[in-house]
Each structure stands twice: as C-alpha cells, then as structure tokens.
Image 1 (cartoon, rainbow, N blue to C red):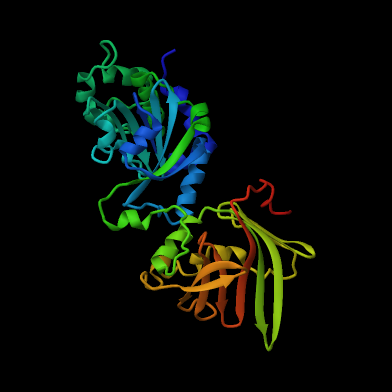
Image 2: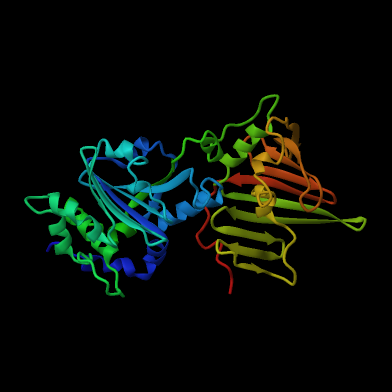
Length: 409
C-alpha cells in the first residue's frame, strides 16, 4: 500500500523523543555512496560503526566530549551517512542542525544527485526540499504548507501526479488555511511519507535503528581557525630533539579517544610525612573509570556521572583527571592556549618512557608540571606543590568488557 503519515507515527515513540524535540534532518540521496557524500562535503574526523540513531547520538556526543564539535557550533556540523541499498544514501542530523536542507552548504551534493530532505528544529521551524538536476524543485514548510501550494500543484512527480496530489494522499498536512486552533500536528510524519512517495525508499523505524552510519564533522564556515580548532591529528611520535607545545598538544588530542589501562601512583605531602597510594585503573573517555587497590574494588563511575566508592571517603586518586588533564583548565580557557604554542618542552623520562614536560599556570595546587608521553601524548606525570600523580604500565586501546563500568547497587 502507498505510504501515508500514519505509517510514521513511530516517530512519536519514546526512543525518538529527543530527535523530535531537539531537531531532525532526514535526507535521501540517489545514485550515491556514503563515502562519496562525505568526500563531497569535505567531512573529517570520520567515525564508522555508529549503528542506528542511538549509535549516531553516541558518536555525536563523543565529538562534543572531545571538544571537536561544540554544541550549536556555527563552524561545524555533525552528520551521519549510511548506504541503504539500491544506490541510495541516508543522511541524518539532530540538535537543530540544518546542513541537509540548505542550498549553499549542500551544493556539492545537490549538483550531482537527486535529493529529498526534510527537517524540523527545536523552534518548530520545518522544511521539505526536493532537488533534481542541480536545481531546487520545491521547498515548503510542512507545518504551514498552504503558503507554498501553488508551486506544489505545478510540479509533477512520477506519472502525472503533482506534489500537491501526493501531499493530499499521504495526509497529515494542513492544506487549507484556517483560523481554528490546532491541537494535533502530523507534518513531520507526513514529510516522511511524502519522501517515500517521491523516492520509493521507506525510512522505517527499523532502518533508523539498524543503519550503520559513518558519523563525521562537516565544516560550514570558511573561518581560517575552524579546521585547526577541530582537528584530530594522527598519532605521530615526537622523538626528535625539540617539541613545541603546539605539537605536543596535537599529539595529546590524538589520544583523546583511547582507553587507558594503567597503574596510578599518587604521592602527597601530609604535613611533613609522605602518603603514597597505588591503584590499578581502567579508563574510557566515554564509558567511565574503574579503580582497584590491594583491598579490591575501590571505585566505579559511569558515563552518566554516577559514582560508587568503597568508602568511607571518596578516593583521592583521580586517574581520569590526569589522562584528560585539559579538563582542569578548559573551564577557564582553551587548553591549547594555556601556554605559548611555540614554547619548547623539556625532555624527561617517566617510568622508562620518554616524555616532554611543560609548566602550566596555577590550577588548584599552584603551577603544575605535566610530562606527556613522546610516543602517544598521554600525560604520564603531573607535579604540583605537595602532590605528584604518575602513570605506570600504560596500555592504550585495550578492549574493555561492557560490564566494567557498571556502578554497584
């Protein structure tokens, strides 16, 4: 049977509540590949295997946590693209982004492909757009389509049907102006149905849940600082005779998605006597932190911020605050700019590993000297007045069990 808006009432299901409330883009691109679309958009920081809307959302959040894509940025947008068969590509966005319905930002794709897109945002703005042969065939606001119906009546689609005919058949659009208040709105569901009628491709709930998206960043401004500000460079060891803070910072950022399994040794001056603590820890930038000592499990925190510890006091070891040391300064200023980017590091050694050390301005304990591993960029040591944090036996990118960061009841 031909699709109607009722086939897409699943968009009201709880699992899609955030997508609906915060803004969605759905774009169908004919005779394309996911890689080809990303190439056309000059996309970078590509992350494969974002399965379904949930995986896409997780990857998007990871970009934000890494500082690659600040929320509501005007310089970069996050997209998810997936090959869905028959030469079609599905592109999605959320959080009120709009690249997929914008002529100038999408031009490199529009010029070479037929595209049907629809969007809504957090402010209840909406748009349905169809491009073919590099030209916009129709663009209208689904919530108030009566403003654009003349064009809809004049543009034909398959056979002799006009866009207006298809809009009438799928239902859900308010095609007549009225002063009566509305208490139901089905224009988003109607847009899904109209896109299917135009393309023959059903964007079903099952497809949205199972499509394997490549999630990437797309630059949307020509500001010269934008590419550098969001760059995730490859991990290149800095083993020469000199290294600037700019170089070490990029190496540090390149390890930003690594899991870390290591031993942390904390030494603190306790009024003339030194206290030494040693813990084994497992750190994932997106899942949480787990610590254990000689007496067993010490603490577990998860991605939602929940924390369990053995007590009676919270641990004084903070491995996540050493591995992700930028968080100590990011609230005040960009970590990249905390010290002179051209400043040279001092060669040192931590646990037999070559490192570059820099002295940073005061945080909590006064100036902090931080030594970054010359091979990976991971902070190996942070020294401040009366406190030294050091990593040993470092293993990066180990596969962790999904149960590792479950917070005990």
